[in-house]
Length: 472
Image 1 (cartoon, one colour):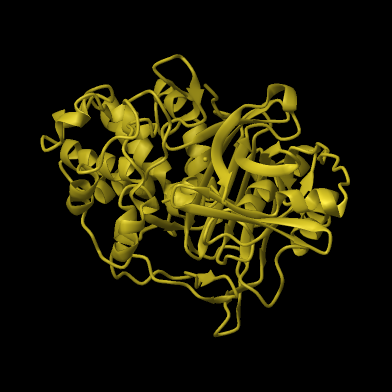
Image 2: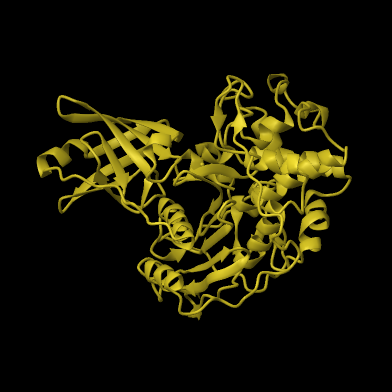
């Protein structure tokens, strides 16, 4: 699941039909190429040998151009990371739920435009207009349970889908269904419950039958239960330290799988190659969802369609404590990138930027960094302080002439640089911006913005905006 959309710093393209769908990703890597050296040099600056690490895979035309592991899989046991290590991929596995929903629709077992109440009769009257499509696109208006302070006391509990449903239906909707995008993993838990009913078997059994077994995804394992998972790495909190336990039951349907880079690559090539779904169904996964007023949101059915240097790319990410996953697929260039990380030392914004940078390197494109401007210390002091947005508190500090921003309780302080007196970018990912309102030379509010295009301002779309007011 990805509660990052509550500010733990998280947000029709067809693939190449000639790509192999059922062959496992090769393990050989093109050696001593300029591309591989460039990628390795870039990644070594972030992932250190004695800290939680990462597994990275880059494919072009279905073949690996780079595959390498960094850091440790286990600090306590001093075990090095392996390139095919297994991680909890959290919301990256929403793809399976979206695809399962569309597969059942193709089989005539459900209607994605039907109201949820047709499949779950206990829905409250306020949910009458919510359809399966609204759930799949996060436009149902149902709040994100994991951003609610009251839910934190339940993070260790193995709550069933029915219990999560009971909690959600007592909450007021944030918006009329179909009118706004509000990311909430509970949407996908409800979809998994619908899949259970429509398929006549458990959600996980249907996903296994339709996708995991046919593709031979031997390292993709349902994460709810007590099964031993070969190759599974240890997750770490910042420090590094041991991570706080969070029950995997909370992500049922919205983040239910362990996997590795090779399995995710095999799945992506099969899905985008048209081997898993019909062209119409695949287009729903890959196309921005259209709201009631005609505007689009950068989310399909379990995938996030964006643009990168004026070309389409499809992104997926997953975040739970100690596990962070980022993937990118560029249909036109036929490039796939996956980066899986078992720590909190690298900010979520940084991983997104890293995967995009690797994709650009793989296509031979040049990364064009934004040009920062210098502001004097007196001006920088104007942004320092606490910023509040509901239950979230952000903080900006000034250290040795540099501003650092932390906009959630669990986020590290990240360096930011000025584009202007009112707009700053995060050094590790310029797609993430802070836009300030100044009054009498002092910042009074900040908008935390995720851009939709990297270094492509004329086509940039605000993928997400969060407003913070300066605390008195």
